Image 1 (cartoon, rainbow over the protein chains, first blue to last red):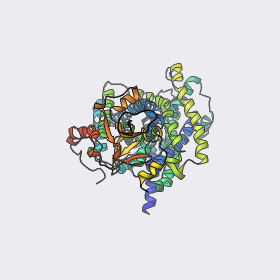
Image 2 (image 1 turned 180 degrees about the vertical axis):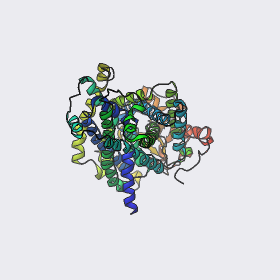
Image 3 (image 1 turned 135 degrees about the horizontal axis):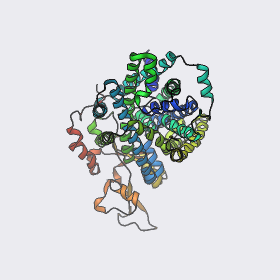
Image 4 (image 1 turned 90 degrees about the vertical axis):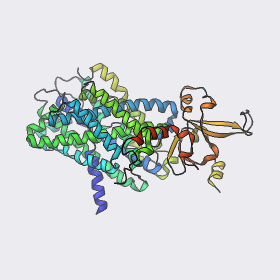
Length: 411
Length: 129
């Protein structure tokens, strides 16, 4: 019974932990402009993140070594150092977006000045990193994040024409009238970056070490990832579908959180809105914790410092200092009154650019018998891994040219 | 056969198996990554090409800067772990001493004593409750 509960908990937190501010904003923007014609990208992204997370969890559980230790070991100090700078910067951008997302959601619920919420949100994130047990942190944020299922409920209450939605989902590569092909592909890359955010890999591999996984936990890891993420992906699709049903016919272009939750308020009234806002706070809070931890993980693993939430802060001093500094920088950026939604849109595009930096080393090490012994990747994982290597490289190379050509999707 | 003998019988490529590997102390706590190596001749003097040479110490700290940018750090700035402290070479390099006994861990101790330990709760064990 206890084991069954553990399995259920793992899957539920994987669902609730899937959506972050990047998925939320990008899916709503895409839904309001392109309907469901980009849903296939969510599917490609979900399969990719399953593959990626399974590999990084497996490498960490079997070898006990986390991603960035391996990146440095394999690429040498220079290449890995360049990778560290790029990954850290993009992770910092994502952290900024997540903290901003918490503040926006709390602002929506309270009408207190968002800049005040930024400070409260960042302080709360730090306090959890400082005090709370790793497993409790993961489970609470993941379970409350499940409240985002409110988007699915809203979709049913809206009573859309399901046949029309299916037809939109089937129109791959055909943006609805008035939208340019360039923007369509720009948002395809952004959506892919949002689903496959590279920080997840640092977090999964280091989280496996934090929770002291061994080869015995591999089947549980596989189950969590392979059931939790596809269901989390369904939440993403529900967000896009809500926007497609309510916002697209009125030509509302999403530029704020209140527009993202407008379909929910329209369908389910104040109660459902409150549920969804709580879900957004939990989802962004959980992701802020993960990105803050990832900033510490990457630097500490590159330099060989002791790291991990399972240690007393004094036993991983430089790791904790790195996270404090990252949070302070994020607050500093947000205090300039930059729009967190704009930061989010930037962060998902640059995530797509940075993906090969972490994807390639993990793919190589998952096949290295010195680290993996009998747990090297199987044929299916390697075949899929090679296909995704191509997809990841194409998305990374296309991202910046598409951004310039389309004026970040505004064309 | 002890671990050291077994390691000695295996061919170790310094670049592949030593450089940039994680160093763990006697209880498995991370210490540093191997930033560079100090190589000396058999008699502990300068390395003479053609004669045997050995690894005298693992270098860390400022050595990462010269690994990145080239050149050599002055010996006065070296932060070393004597090779005699190395117990085992695997996917990690394991030491036979505690990390607190090593001089090169000073930056961790400095941040701990000046910053982290002074914040309330800095000594709290997060796994205890």
